[in-house]
Length: 546
Image 1 (tube, rainbow, N blue to C red):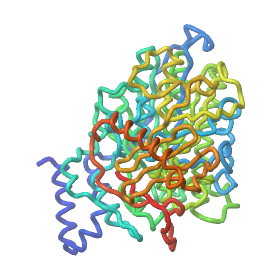
Image 2: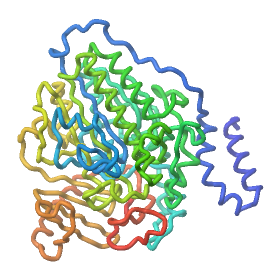
Image 3: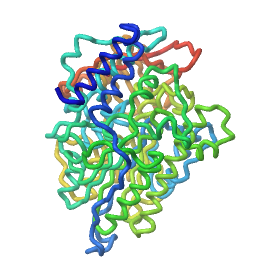
C-alpha cells in the first residue's frame, strides 16, 4: 500500500476509534479536505513565469487581430455593480467595471447559460448549450452532495438519490468532453497565445484541465472554489454563514492553493483576488506584442466570504458584518479589473482589445443577503431572473461606439462566436451562439434562450418567459415586457402561450444529449427569501437538481 493511502486509512481508523460512530459522524465533514491534502500536498508559494512573446511586434497593435480578454466573476449579483445596479448596500461603487460599459456596450438583458457554475462555464468555452453535450449539472464531489443534503434544515428537505451514486464518475473526470472544441482551441489555431487565470471547474484530469483544452498556460483553481487567504491569516476578515450547509462544508475542506500548468498545488501569494489580478497584468505584459486570449476567471465573490482587512476597513459605513465582508470582496474584484484595463492602456493595446465582463450566474441565496439581485426575484440555482440575469458588458473601442445600451438579449453561448468572428476563426454549425458585436448593433433575428437542470426547464421567447418544474409541479409564465421582475404568473390566463412555449421546451429537449453524470441531490431554493437565521422559508420554491 502506498504511503499516502496508508495515511488516509490511518486517519479514518483513528477517527472511528475516537468516540466510535458518533465521533466519526461529527468528524467526517473534515475528511474530504484531509484526504485531498494527503493526495496532493500543498507546496509553498513559488513565482510564475509567463512565456515571453516577441520583444518587438511584427505588426502594430492596430493592424493585428484583436486581443480578447474574458473576465468572469463568480456568483456576482446584478445589483452588485454600479453599472447594472446600486452596488453592495448602495455603498460599494465599481468604477473599473463600470468603465467597460461607459467605453463600450452594456446589454440591458445579459444571461448566463445556466444558474450554476460549471454548466455556464462550459457554455462560455464551447459556445453551445451545455445540455447539448451532457454537461447539465455542476461538477461536485459525491461527498459534497451527500453531506450538504444531510446537513440541510428547513420546511422542505433535500432528496439524496443513493441509487445514482454508482453512476457518478470521480470529480476529476467530470468535465468538458475532449471532442468539444473550446474557444481556446479555436483561437490558438488562428495564432493566438491562450492564457487562463483563476477558476476552471470544467474537469481536473490532465486531459480536462485548461492545458488539455487549448490553453497554452494556466494558473488555476481547478475545482469549484478556493480559500482567498488562510482563515487565520492576520490580514483576513472572515464571515462564516453557519446557517448554510454549503458554507459549513467549504470552510474545513477548501484548500488555499493554485496550480500552474497542471502542477501539484502550491500556495498563492497573498489575497487570491489581488494575486490573480497581478498575474493577469504580468500575462498581458508578456504577450503585448502578439495576439492573445486571456480567460480571467476570478473566484470572487463566491463563498467562503473572506476580505482583506484593508478593504474591510475601507467600508466602515456598512454596519452589517457579512454585507461589509461581501462588499469588500467586490471592491477587490473591481480594483483588479482596473489593473488589467490600466495595463492595456499602458501598453497601447486598449483600442484593439475586446474586453467582456460577466458573471457565471446570479448572486447566491446562501450568503444571506437580500438585495444582491434586486430588482429581480430568485437566486443562483433558480431560473428566475435573479439567478440568470447577470452583468454583461463588452468594449472594443476600434469597433464599438462608447456608452451604448443594447436591448438585445445576450447569453454566455455568444462568447465563442464573438471571439471567433473577431479572430477570423471558423465556427461550427454546432455552435449555438451569435456574435455579440453584431448583436449589439441590432443585427440578427430574435432567438429563444433555453435553460435546463433536470426536471426544471425554462425558455425565453420574445417577451415571454416560461419556467416549468416537475418538483414541485409548477408553471410560471411571465410577460417580461410589462413584468420584468416576474411578479404576475399568467400560466392559467394564457393557455395558448403556455402551450406554445412548452412545445419549444420539448423541442430543445429532443436536441439535448444524455447527462454525462446524474444529479445526486434535489434541494429546495425559495424564490423570495435568502437563507438566514430565523428566516421562515415560505412561498414559491424550486427543487434544484444537481
